Image (cartoon, rainbow, N blue to C red):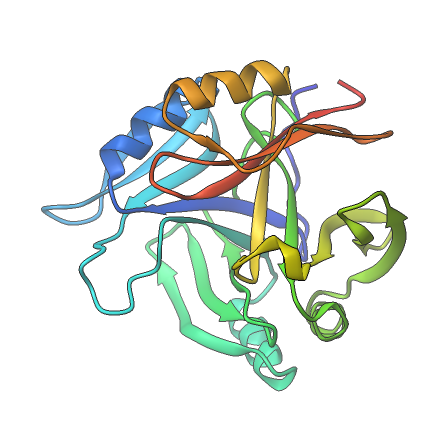
Length: 262
């Protein structure tokens, strides 16, 4: 069911893609999810692409210059809502995190900072003003889950618990997942966490993004037709849904899932 979320402090509120080819990414995701496109000028030569469905924002996209020193590969970035960006950034530092970009205002939209947790995952914190974040969740083509893949779940558990007040609930899952950690904000699920296994190859520590879809298999087929690559078989999680990992044509990874209650 369509949802206009209320992004409480400590919940994921926004995702944006840094792309080495903004036009190609715009075409891929708008075709895959049926997103409408709104390009906002950032400068005389650059734009910030806002994706939306039915007038409600779903994600964003911006151009990254791959020729710049230390340019990151194409990837989805996540934002967590906070009451105060400045206070949260200071707290993250006291907990062992790094402040990669000090708090700054994004016009009247909000105030942001870019952080790195002690295990290496990069994420942003967002104090909303005019822009609160995504306007839909758990609908076809809408954000529905974020999940930390890390090699040190214990350190990550302590860091995020201290920063956002998350509590951790662990459960044994079928291989290759093993122990899966659900982060809870009060009694509400806020995100997940998995240990990166040695046989997964060179998987970087990162926050992954899941988009809800009506039919996982047909979405995967469409994504491949549009130039994406599958990163393993489509799988069922009893009581959760059917999901698949994909890499878009430029290499940014994401997951699609048909939730069991859809």
